Amino acid sequence: MERFSDEAWRATKGLRGAIDALPFIADLCAGTLSRPRFQTYITQDALYLGQFGRALAIAGAKAPDTAGLEAFVKWALGAVVVETELHRTYLGAFGVDPAGAAKAEPTPDCLAYTSYLLTTAYHEPWEVTVAALLPCFWIYWDVGKTISRQAAPDNPYQAWIDTYSGDEFGEVVEAMIATTDVAAAAVTPAQRGRMQTAFIRACQYEYLFWDGAYEQRGWPS
Image (cartoon, rainbow, N blue to C red):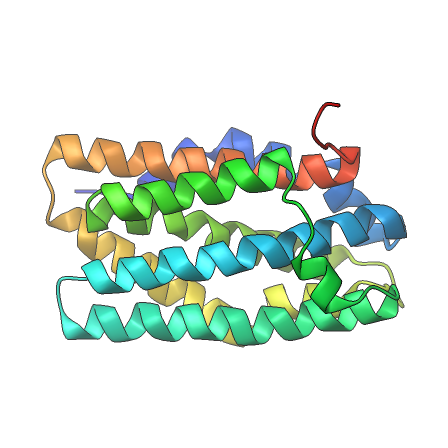
């Protein structure tokens, strides 16, 4: 049988192409992304990260063995440490107090995405949960590698590009892909279908998150 990761990656080809074509991604690559748009993104990403780490921790608690528990807890802590430092770098450069940013209100896209991941982690089987968590790793790595090959010289967002295109992050992504494939190999066809649905939905939220930051999409008043 085809690996779940290959099947899911193929199923999201069009969506991933749409992500690569987003104005946010194009401007980030060119180094022309406006400071307000990136500031919105990095502030919301900091909020997202806190909830994503919790979802990873829940997945670890649901893991079928000790190795899975250890891996997800490690990834949760690693994501918090590495990405929080990245957030501090850019928030500081923009003159934004990290403590104040942590108190910011999540945008509709951020709240929808984190709510989806936490609901999935709490209520769905472990296999569906890992499928929902995978795109945050894999899409970022894919976008990071693509941008790294095309980025403008002296790009002001080079630290972001380096983080998500680097070998260290890539190793985590490959381990997460392998974990998801192992999980998918032990489920029924119906459960595998739920895994793919979860993977696609998370990819759609990745699109909305970046698009929302670029459009400065907030709550209606």
